[in-house]
Length: 209
Image 1 (cartoon, helix red, strand yellow):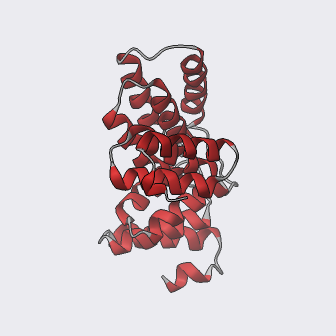
Image 2 (cartoon, rainbow, N blue to C red; image 1 turned 45 degrees about the vertical axis):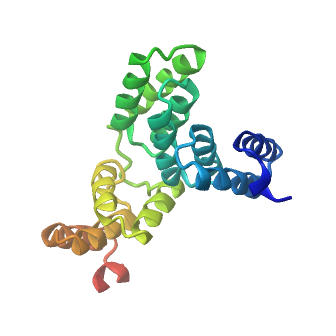
């Protein structure tokens, strides 16, 4: 079937149907075709974000959710998805700001009440340190994706925050050092690599860097 012959509404419905049926790739094709025609289509942007979260690409979902909200900030579901993604990425302060924005626009209901509980639990846990724990797999992937996309300042900023919690994560200190070196923060880079080596004296990657 030629997707270009469909109206945007028809393409959206077919994308939603495929999405519900678990056919993520097919759904993505429909949503992408809509966004080529109308990059600000709020539902297509939102659903692309949901697809990204569904396959673990939480960081990549954020621009889609933001685009949906820029076009239609009065849709509660867009706020719910965006805030939940921020919580998953442990960007708690950003999540709190977004939650307050949603509330100011009149967002309410059980879903928001539950999200508020989840957000408060997340905020309360942010000062908890895991000195022996490594960075969760999902966050490792998220940071590596950013690093591979050369979003080095964003990697450095997020890594700085995360090291306060996962202060013995070799991957985290190494990524922080590598990104710092490439944005000209040489002192920070050296400190980060030294920290990695102090945790694991035979950590070859840190010595190389």
